[in-house]
Amino acid sequence: MSIIPHIVVQGAERAAAFYCDAFGAEELDRIPTPDGRLMSVQLRIGDGLLHLADEFPEMGVLAPPSIGGTAVVLALDVTDAEAVFAQAVTAGAEVRQPLADMFWGDRHGQLEDPFGHRWNVSQHMRDVPHDEVVAAAAIAFAAGPAS
View 1 (spheres, helix red, strand yellow):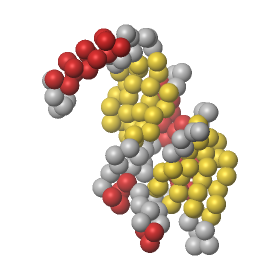
View 2 (view 1 turned 90 degrees about the vertical axis):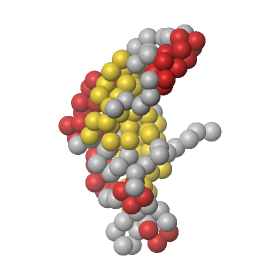
View 3 (view 1 turned 135 degrees about the vertical axis):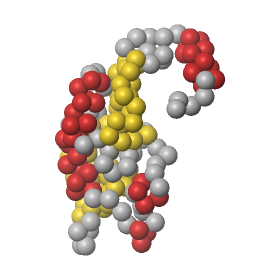
């Protein structure tokens, strides 16, 4: 069994090109509809798959801008966070959280793509014992949200 994200965008043609530029995706397949929209574009990013589709409002299939944002964050586990982050920003992603060394042992940052989807980019740097991660999370969240 595997889980494969299927995201909805406004402009699947542009989004597929963006993901290829930003994350080195490889397009595997696409299914167009008679009206020119794309029902599905299958991409490979690293060893994972991503499906994306145009909006189909008549079927309740909507992208983040149409619903006021997203509650989902897609995560990329990479070997060179600096390079992936820079490539995505160059391609047009917006930095939501700059790359930084995190208490759980990753170099981590968050981007928002031009289609309203959020992406975590993480590179594992060091192993941290679970009890230390839990203690550090308690401290970080006791301080409240960053302003």
